[in-house]
Image 1 (cartoon, helix red, strand yellow):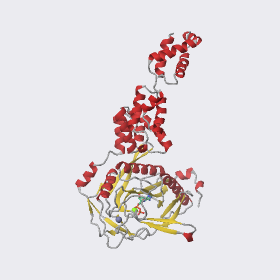
Image 2 (cartoon, protein in one colour):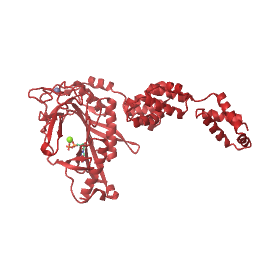
Image 3 (spheres, rainbow, N blue to C red):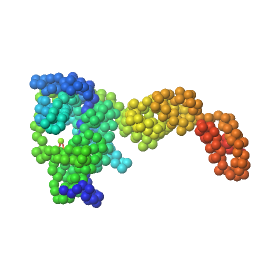
Image 4 (cartoon, rainbow, N blue to C red):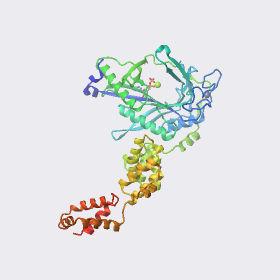
Amino acid sequence: MLSLTAISPEVLARYEAVIGLEVHVQLLTRSKIFCSCSTRFGDPPNSNTCPVCLGLPGALPVLNREAVTMAMKAALALNCAVHPRSRFARKNYFYPDLPKGYQISQYDEPLASAGWLDIEVAGKAKRIGVTRVHLEEDAGKSLHEGFPDSDRKSYIDLNRSGVPLIEIVSEPDLRTPEEAYDYLTRLKTLMLYLEVSNCNMEEGSLRCDANVSVRRAGRTAFGTKTEVKNLNSFKFLQKALAHEIERQIGVLEEGGEILQETRLWDSREQRTYGMRSKEFAHDYRYFPEPDLLPLVISEEWKEEVRRSMPELPEAKRARFVDQYGLGDYDAAQLTSSKALADYFEEAVRRAGEPKLSANWILSELSHLLKEAGKEIAESPVSPERLAELLALVAKGTLSGKMGKDILAEMFSTGRAASEIVAGKGFEQISDPEKIAAVGREIMAANPKQVEQYRGGKAALLGWFVGQVMKATGGRANPQLVQEILKKELGS
Ligand code: ADP
Ligand code: ZN
Ligand code: MG
């Protein structure tokens, strides 16, 4: 096989990739999908279990209404048709952490289908089809420890067994790893806005499998796809796709054929490798789940769910542009998470300075948060406190530079701006009399410069301003200083 680095950009350019994502999202219900066990993460192994999620014979599932409501929210936000009737099915396979020997999922009658999600490509919207959204239960977790192999032990934790998931399948509409990344980012943002999942990738609340094929540019027929699993970060998704696209092109350039198979991404070796062939196209022997009635969703229920949905990112972004006069970029940044958008709106509600607030939140505050490794929700400076600071900056009581120093101090000490300002004599000097007095002192001490200025060397004004700023420890209002000095110096 060709080594990956041997494929030239010219050869790569002769191909186009086709990508479709299958995303699993764990729903934030308190109890599991078919029993009342807790879904809490990190509890002692097998403590959140009962006959239903242990798969004991004779135990019967009862559908969790909240899981359906959350799944509906996700489906509606993805512009899907939510079907009045859908059905659960058994997907049969053997795995040690699947005690029943089948997973309850949905198959030929999913909860919802035919939606879309808009992504952005080179500044323009591109619509990605969403094939379906269906409900299913999660399996348990196998844990392996001990090396060498002779000491190896495996454990099974069934706390996760029966936790509700939705699977969101995209159409093969994505064309580059960057598009796939953008799609997953927007999908995650949407789920977080809806508060149907915490989308925590490390805890497995958001999982993504990527299907990818390549074809000669200009062809319409799809090539044979592989499915890449084990993508537990956004970065891995992008890297694995880039790698897999090059690998497939390499095989085709050598006259080889792509095997339809499942491949695993190895982040240490930065490559994918074959796991199982899909030639036999899994036969899961799906059949309708006999222990559950079809899921019937009334128009009223659906409308009730629709009404309960929050404003979604796109709508919020447009409103921020309209209502606050923000630029597109700032509006997009501020609505990248609901927590950030809420923070901004709370600050503006109090300080009434949308542009100033946007600037400070996106630059100074974001910078401090990033350095401290904190999320906006954990900000030591509340929106109320930030608003108080910004009001002082807007009034000119504090210069921008002082404001920044004070914000840093508010961030590290949790104290309010007014407290810090009072304690430090930090206030900006805006009293014209005080400034004029300092100016006159400096003029008296520098008669030669005064003479030169009056003789026509106008550029010296800047030097005088600098002297006043120095004498006041940078606290004088520079604009006022300029005006007053001009007057004092005359011509
Ligand atoms: P399977 O039967 O293997 O599960 P599906 O047709 O259900 O395949 O599609 C699963 C995922 O693969 C979907 O996200 C779909 O968009 C994507 N997909 C289908 N065909 C291709 C292809 N030729 N190349 C890339 N992705 C594809
Ligand atoms: Zn249970
Ligand atoms: Mg499929």
